[in-house]
Length: 329
Image 1 (cartoon, rainbow, N blue to C red):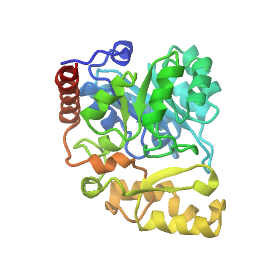
Image 2 (tube, helix red, strand yellow):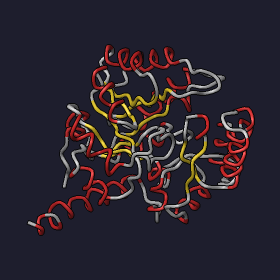
Image 3 (tube, helix red, strand yellow):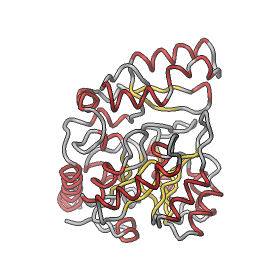
Image 4 (cartoon, rainbow, N blue to C red):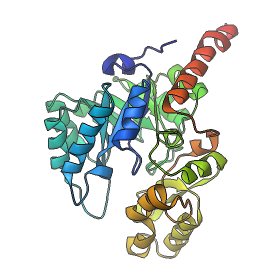
């Protein structure tokens, strides 16, 4: 079965499944694998547009992705407080030059980015954690919203609203289509998201535990063993909350934050992106850095290919829609 939604129709993809932006995971290989399997793969701009190459690193990654797939893919731009402000104008210019068709925006004050991307003819999917922010993005011209519930990995905002309520509210208040983001890992959740008014799902954590994900096997094995309770929050005192894997480093950060609330200088050595990258790409040590993942880590019980994962999810959703739900009538 092919699930036909406003997401699949707008982007010309087979499955209503997006692989969201992910630090040190969202490279061309990951995006192409998802797109080739029928979803929408996403390159993470802030992972590849870094020194020494800068924005040219993003250009190279986009071109590499085009060599790996002839299917639609997009680029993620996240607007959150970081140590050194990224060259957002340069990133957008590269996307325009390379004729990127889809952009996933996320974070604070996205109006300028959304406007530039819309002016260039891109399809804008804005990820946000509150419906009031989604309504603002709708006014700014976003084409679709990715509603990001509290169970997501990365930054869930400061309001702690889960998807069970958030998606229902989005369906009531938004005029543009939306997808469910955060906590999704299987076909039952895909069916539930569609039932609640979403046009598909956006997944990050689940795609980390696939054969094609460009992270070391030891990290993937850790994810398979994890429980739904194996995440925690850091940066609460900085008003920039992030859900991460609950390991010794994350708990050390939490302890320091408790003693020195709001003082980033006390934890910067533990939360540097380079630590994160080394865990994923060099050491496979799941304990030595602070790395993002959602509560759906506890639903991960195997490491399939992207095609196997998405085909199974759609088949599960189809069975629920055709059989389980129909039997209730």
